[in-house]
Image (cartoon, rainbow, N blue to C red):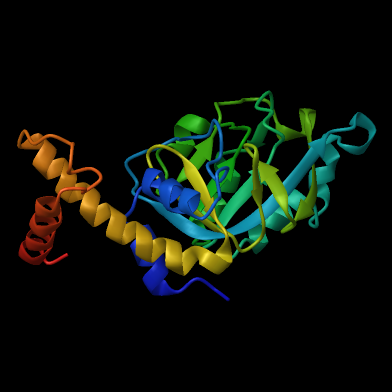
Amino acid sequence: MAMTASTRDKLKGVSTATLCTALFKRGLRNQFIQEVHPLNPTLGNMVGEAFTLRYIPAREDLNPLSVFLDRGHPQRKAVEECPPGAVMVIDSRKNARAASAGGILVSRLMKRGVAGVVTDGGFRDSPEIATLSIPAYHHRPSAPTNLTLHQALDINVPIGCGDVAVWPGDVVVGDGEGVVIIPADIADAIADEAVEMTAFEDFVTEKVMEGRSILGLYPPTDEQSKVDFAAWRKAKGR
């Protein structure tokens, strides 16, 4: 089942930290992609369903520059087939010694309406990608062409990205800290819970900034904290 517009909107307003806690409550401890960072953390949340591309180690006799003459090359094909609103997630085996993609391909994804792109490797042309209006996450900049180390093999299959299992259709959320993967079948429930958690955390933050102790407030073990939160929600319309 495709992600609803309501769930997408809710996930645009919550943090990956809050989502990780909601996932942890369900026993999911390893959903935060390790060692990827946004090229432009000011773009707001990236939200979309995963469309995957898998690289294997390149073998020189099978991966010359001429492979790009093939219009069906998996990397090029993935860029043209990733659905609008989806997030392309690339398995580069945590190897950033060669690029996973560059500015032209990421620009094409942006123009096609793709919601974002994530690799556990690196992007070339990263200064240019950082100026685009598409969220992009990688480990670090990497100038060499992907062909020197990576051979594109599979499109839209289960992959590993930054030590996290990613299945096509999983919900991908990125913010200024990083990227979390939400199993598709619980995305609606996680989004609802994260909105509730965010309201409470905003209340707590406001009270802490006013000088209040976290004891009895976070978590709200004092009955007065619950009363105050209810009043705060009513006043704020949340």
